[in-house]
Image (cartoon, rainbow, N blue to C red; front, side, top):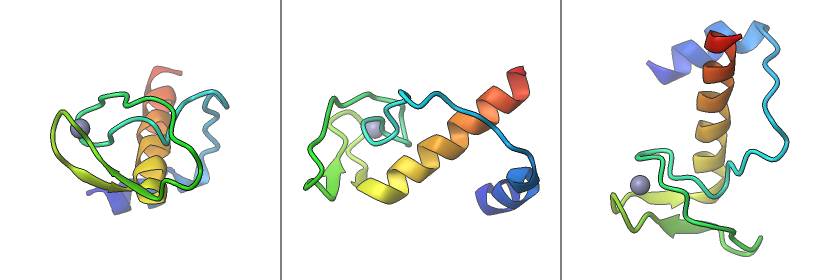
Length: 73
Ligand SMILES: [Zn+2]
């Protein structure tokens, strides 16, 4: 599960692009929903209808992107 993997990979420093738009991408289906102003704390993906907390969704995207980078490095 995700939490286990997060801990497992926690000791490896994975660098992701600072331009990676983690707060714009749906962590459920990968849809990029465009720029969101900072006062938007939560949003619903128009493609898969998943409701996201901005920060939780962003952290899930950063983890996923980090794992992708890790596996292809
Ligand atoms: Zn989605």
